[in-house]
Image (cartoon, rainbow, N blue to C red; front, top):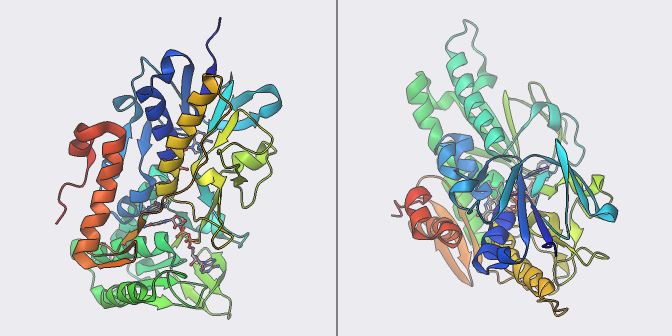
Length: 401
Ligand code: FAD
Ligand code: NAD
């Protein structure tokens, strides 16, 4: 009698927590569990704006997978998923293939470019350790270059962040904290440096609490950030961006943060998607498949109160991992009664760099240092769920106030 095979794709918030829950609930004794990920480490996507700006080393945001998941109980394969063949219950990897009885898709998201020309070629993305390490080095290189050339290139010291959603705002917050340090290090006047936050909607953080948005914008402006609101970007060029109204801003660094779509592996595999995401059933299975679960940024779930999709967040990915692992356990024990997933949204907290942040927790608004402390506690709580106190002490943000 062969053990059923559970295959988890992606070691992000959703995949790691599913693996961890399946271990804790002893499912590994009755099934063969395999986790596949591009890298041999897990990184916390929600921290990536910090290493992107260089305010935190990227090693602080990642950990080796075998340091948190017991490799005697779960197989780990470092490889890239290329395609899922549901009719053959197979997953094609870059170097090989795997079969499964139960599949969990947790491959995360990709930047949404809306087909805008030049984004792929000329803009940076806050997406992975590899992509943010490149942003940090590029920024430093631009500072280093400025004084090294006889003819001064002001565009070297201009930074455009496309999209003032949470990712764009959090990155601009870190960057505005880092710039005075860079100016000091590379002997450059602060007023030579320009940081633009360019947003298509009539406000930064569209849809978020107005008072908190004002607080964030005022703070960032006081650090020298220039907002260009109501200003969609039409094209990214080698030397800057072209705005809808025809104006061009010259800049050697454009960071693209205009939202995300589901992993393109889903479209390639023939799933029906909306912006690359699979609209899952209440039990988190893909429609028409009784053995395929989809969680995190690859899953689309609707907020029925407003009849719109929930924004994809780590908060939801983590909660889905609990439901997903409970449902796999139920299926293995022959039960047909699966749990329905209902997100329990605790709130939203966004960092603004340094000890500044904003947040809405329930109906309570948080500003400044107290919001920043809550943000660090949220980050630490995840580490606690994944690896207990030892992981919090090793990788956590312990300097809370
Ligand atoms: P991820 O955590 O992104 O993990 C996906 C994993 O799959 C990665 O490890 C990746 O390497 C791997 N992978 C991808 N493709 C392949 C492939 N083809 N083969 C093998 N492996 C692959 N959400 C919040 O709730 N709160 C926040 O404060 C917050 N802040 C954020 C800040 C930033 C800067 C960003 C970018 C996002 C933030 N989010 C936040 C959103 C949150 O990060 C995502 O919703 C969350 O990471 C989704 O989890 P996931 O498990 O679906 O994917
Ligand atoms: P987003 O969709 O939240 O924001 C993208 C922004 O880009 C929007 O304001 C949009 O109007 C703007 N935009 C779109 N096209 C544009 C164009 N051509 N020119 C200029 N602006 C344009 O996406 P995001 O900020 O990348 O966030 C992705 C997901 O991650 C969201 O679900 C978000 O809630 C989540 N997230 C959460 C946090 C947090 O809770 N602290 C932090 C970061 C991200």
